[in-house]
Structure formats: structure tokens, C-alpha cells
Amino acid sequence: MSFGASVVFYNAFLPDIAAVGDRDAVSSRGWALGYLGGGLLLALDLWLFSAAPRLGWDPVQLVRINLASAGVWWAAFTLIPLAVLRNRRPIRALPVGQGYLTTGIRQLARTLRRARAYPQTLWFRARGAGRSTGTDRWGRGVSSGAGSPRSQRILIHN
Image 1: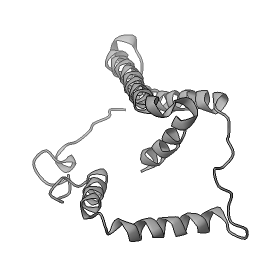
Image 2 (image 1 turned 120 degrees about the horizontal axis):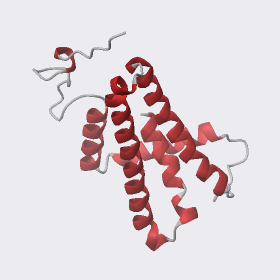
Image 3 (image 1 turned 180 degrees about the horizontal axis):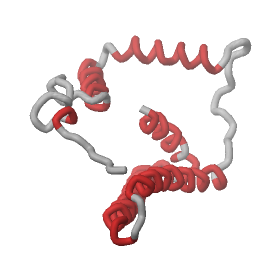
């Protein structure tokens, strides 16, 4: 859920870094480079973990280091847009006497009322929400069946 929320902010930067006709290409390149970088970090972490016994490192401690490396990776690449991109003025000012929270709730309610006119979009969003919350495409939990997390065990030796 947090990742999905973060994408909203990344997409909000697109108007500041790309012209209207270039936004798809810039977004695609950004996602591709992000996945490539994340894949490289994962490959490095997996190599370090698999090489831990040969290097004489404690695998449990290395798992902690691997997890911390992901946090450092995200933090480092978050600092770049924070340093380079500048705040811009809002397109519209808030109405007098209203706050961001109440205005946002009103806009959400209006969007939900209008969404009834688009049943296929609602179905798509409902199914997407199901997949992102751990249910498969038929609505069953992913924990059912032979290959379920319940039937698998992860062993970490101290």
C-alpha cells in the first residue's frame, strides 16, 4: 500500500521534468531504470548472501545488512528529486475557510459518485485491489493450495 501511495508522488513530478509529449517516454525510462537498479541491488544482495559462508560472514547478520541496503537504496534515490526538483505554486488556491483534508474528502466523494457511470473501471479496480491484498484472481486467498506459504518453511540458523 505504501508503494502505491509513493507512486502518486513520483507521477506528480512528471509535469516538472517532461513536456506533455515526452511524459510516456520519460516515465517508461524511469521505471525501467528503477527496476534495473533494484535488480542489480537484489543480485548483489543474493550474491553476498550465497557467498557468506565462504567469506566467513554470519548469514543472519547479512540478511539484516541486505534489508538495510534496500532502505539506503530507496533513501539515496529519493534524495535526488528532493534536491533537484522545486515546489511549484498550486494550480488553484483552496477556497476560503476550507482545509486540504475536507477538500480532498469532498473531491473523493465526487469521484466515487461519478465512478458509477464506469462499471468496467470499477470492476478492474476492485480486482486489482484484490490482487494487491493477497487474493488470487478468483478471490481465494493465496494461502490455499499445495504451494501456499503455510506449506513452506523458511529456516534461519543461528
